[in-house]
Length: 297
Length: 337
Image (cartoon, rainbow over the protein chains, first blue to last red):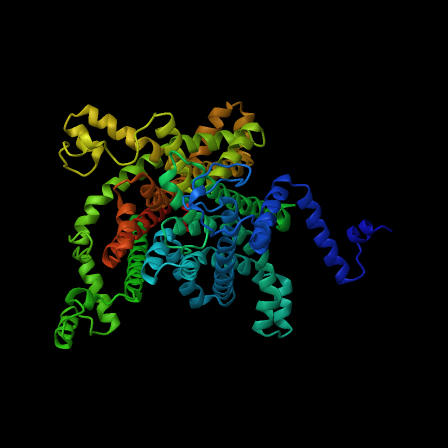
């Protein structure tokens, strides 16, 4: 029996084997989707850039050299230099750090919040459901970018405040998803059985409902990360995100803006980085939907 | 009776959302580290003057009382004074908002005119090359930062090709000669019979509205495609085809009316998103709209101007949401369940 047969068998002898088999099937489906592989490789590249920036970047991202300012892309500075003579490639590589940090923090803050609200609303029903879903609907109808803008403007610019502002407006979709999943699972026989056996609410919520809500939430979070990158870059562009001299893609576009007609690369390079980052999350999110959601066959 | 019940339902939701929105903007204002009293009396005021001003402004009252006061004032059209322009915020908003509406409306028109037919086409040619092409175009639209694409657009179509006019709403020549009547440049130019100014205004409007139109096209066409694909598998479509109806007839006469209600929801929500998206677009094109006003106020710590602008966009969202709800409730019996 080969490894492959062992993984794909219809009669696994242990839970561990079944689990490994399921992950193998997920991987097989992933490998068949070129779009998702492309997205995953961009994502891996961005993560590598963020983790290994000091070793990958050819120059110090903040080292100024006025004699070499606004150089076009060439053999020394592969992507050119900005108005202070800083190497654009190095700044783009370092720029992966604040971007990934914001995206991760927003996900860590907003997904659990949305899940908690959605599962409670679906599981407990009654007035809890009514109140929580009313609040969710109200937050859903708010203008996200402008609220984030106002919040950062008032709290003061910076990464932490940008994360708080985005997270506060990002959770409602997760609450809705979690509630829908909870409602459809609540009636199922296995959950009734768990209840009849006298499992406490906490076991049912964390042991049974949460794992069922997770796949669709993960898909939605991944897709939303594309939008979060854009929002974060927008805040950076307006000068409300990461503060100088930290290199952040949105802020880099803002500083390249005045040279757009003559030294276009200063603004173009970080723009392409944002585009690729956002594209990667969109592709991976779409791919995950096909791979993780068993209802898609 | 149905109308009454629907209006009552939509009305309560509307009021609830409005109050919640105002609570949020009120709390954001409260979180500001700037002392509004100090801003009025200056930092050399004696403690007595400071205290008197604080009482005068109602800031010694409990929070809920301050909130009621805030709502009451806003209802009367008082959103405070803008410290950067020196005018009441409401006056400023009336001045800047028409430019944003102009931009967002043209963007939406483009998005609907091209997005809906393209979505139908993609559903019709499901998984063929035109569908794949549209998927890539939309994916790009979802992923590209709007302010960056605006800069690239300016570089290519204004600086290199010279097809469109540059930043701003009008060339300076017309800016100061055109009589302002409605603050909608297009309407003003039309009313004055100044065709040159009208053409100039359209040339300025072209690039930013095409840009916004592209983003709403991406969303609207994807949703249209999804709605159509879902319907095309149903039996009434099969029946119509068996009876020999042309594909065009099936799509436009049979399927389109069935997806009209959700499609309408998508379109009206994307109008709200466009009004908001205009914030970033306007800063790139120096478009004198709400977005420029808010971002300008951000940097002069002009809290009432920022919150006034935020509230206005929020109200647009709430109004569009409630109206959509009401209309789809009336139009679609399935939504009443």
